[in-house]
Length: 271
Image (tube, rainbow, N blue to C red; front, side, top):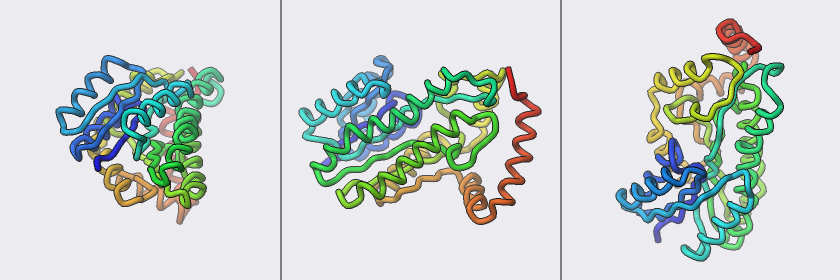
């Protein structure tokens, strides 16, 4: 039987790439997104790739939207096998320069959006006695770069939630997969908030230079979910840095401090 997949923020970037990866396996894929034009387009792309596509409007800031999606998937497909909490936004800035409004905005989407997705779908997955949550975090939640405190905190929150739920839900037949990519080309900077001039251009350059595509990350996620693995760390260099942090934290601290000084010299600490 084909997989039933729901992806928040599935109309672009990694969400779209993952939707098409599942579609190539003949999956039924529901796209939840705030952009109806792109959502309908990806719905057609899913069908062209060999799957069954469905677009439903969904803003992860509203739990009612997620509840409507859940109810429609139960009615249409009898449930869902994979829930991908992918929707997210980016921000940068110093602790004194970033507004509390920007902090609240990113935490509401990046952290609470994942919390809402897990909260809404957990009872259904428990009833089914099976299912997988794929929560998209970031290497920023494992290795905390300067001038990105709000983004770092939001992604660290997703990692903490994912580790907790992996233990909490395992005996209910529910698996959790936590995705921590570094830079790769997406449209993340289109909605990025920053008090630092030029930060978005710098991030775009890092994305283009990464050598890793959204399709590469989607493939890693697909394989990890199939195997029931928790961690997805697609970038080799950053994965090695994370290992260094765990086993030689003093060395990692020195390297990150040097990098921090370079970033602060380049962008400054305030607007």
